[in-house]
Length: 184
Image (cartoon, rainbow, N blue to C red; front, side, top):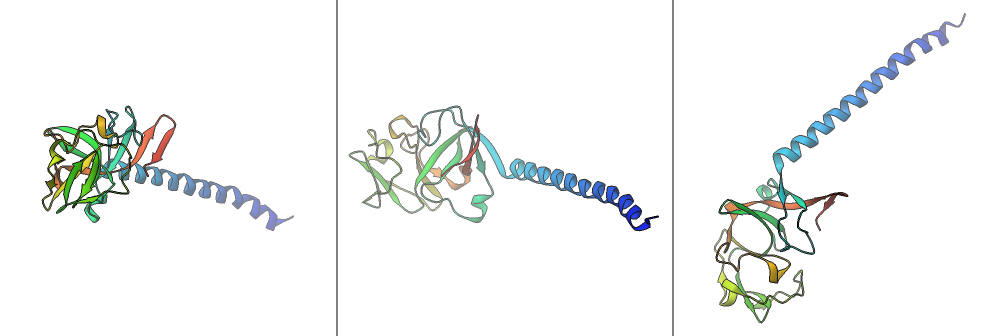
């Protein structure tokens, strides 16, 4: 009797099934894309010491994106992951290529100017290799831990300056038990 409403009832379930299939397919593609992006462009790096405290704590894991530095150069204050002697470290970039880094009376100097906007107020008790100044080559960086007095970094002979080829990537996200958080 009502052919118009019968047709509408018959096509509506099919339309709903197609819409649901589209949503599920889109969701699966989104998950696969995200997985591939993280897998190919990010590396999980465990934080094994308190050297980056309070920004990062021991036991946390950070994601380090290798693709970031394919498009831009590492910048001052970036937290990066790098490899020295088969071990991966997480530290903050302080000195850039061509600069001279010196630590005197606990203060960091870049080209004989105090680093005023440093991320920490903690005085570096041991200047290590930076006591007389370290001039960086065109592909070298000077890295320090935020916890300056509990950090093996560019002041140490075991690490020294970090070459661009040793940098794995910029740390951009920390993974904690409560979920992922972007690193400021």
